[in-house]
Image (cartoon, rainbow, N blue to C red; front, side):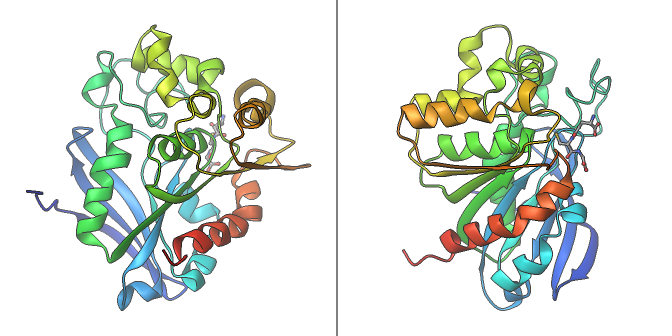
Length: 285
Ligand SMILES: N[C@@H](CCC(=O)N[C@@H](CS)C(=O)NCC(=O)O)C(=O)O
């Protein structure tokens, strides 16, 4: 039996004939109060609509994408809902949690932490794959079809969730993803603290490792700016390209000269991603 979760409406704003709503709820997976945002297109007033998950990057919450990507106009036309979770548990004060931008609050990395004190709350993998989908199904007119996308740490999240759940997401895409976190400074810092020093436990959260393992054959669509200041040290898209090539895994990797890591890059290409996801979400089965 599933319990109906209660949601508190934080705000609602009409936008391109649909509604942008923010809700607060108690997360059982994270054991704290969380806020998420959902854009409901106008079609949701009379029918069930498909859902695009958007996972944001370091320092973000549920608002960055909704305020900066400019996705609502086309999502409204295409009849797609978009749900943005926050990027970490909130309202806690664990030791060191707020000391740096790339670890702790705003930096949950979409993993289930196993190390104290993080393991009590930092279970973003379960939150995004189990708890929030169940909340969304209970409260919104969704038709059960889902796709997923994200940026940077959230691009990593989108790729690993899709690779680990074959058949669940109709399509997956990412902007500037951390494709090989087990070998990037951001990933090493997060995984050693959340998961411990046993690197065997890290590989289940690494897109390159999952592709090498043949976890799923889902095509990957990635956009990367060539003027991104995190490109060489943290993101390393050439690693994903090489492993996909070696294992014959379908990948579309577009490199865009001059674009950086910011939401201006995302806003420039978000329509391509929305159309890509709409094509898969609306496909007749
Ligand atoms: N030092 C930068 C690094 C963090 C960063 O670039 N975050 C990206 C995701 S990895 C972002 O989306 N920032 C929030 C925004 O641009 O709205 C900062 O603190 O903003």
